[in-house]
Length: 137
Image (cartoon, rainbow, N blue to C red; front, side):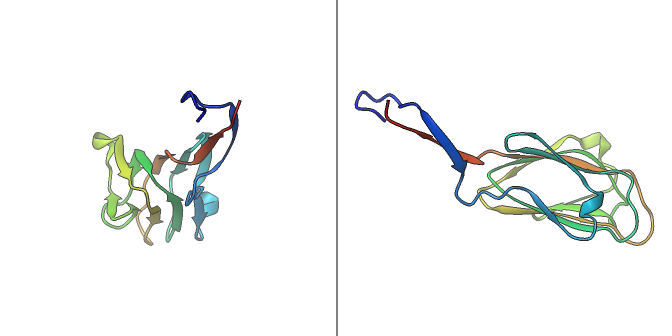
């Protein structure tokens, strides 16, 4: 800040300390659609799925995850966000927004070897992805 309390001109921005861009690991990652909607906002979805799918999407908080579609085989095929497991047809209760703390988060997807369904979709919003710097005038 300048002596009069105002900010100087914008200098630039860098990723915030501890920030982790979303990344996927596991055999099913190539089947999961992902897109960046805006700075710090990503969408992930898996349509009609098959047997024995496994993937882990890792990212950092703080932020939120909004599940916009979830239709899986109840109790056998699940999307686990942190310690919350989502399974079955949740059409009547969506969208569902979960708040993420300032810690790393894992979103785990698993399907078993039998019944399939229509899949899932969610948006991940990371609220502290960048730190901006202001300089002297």
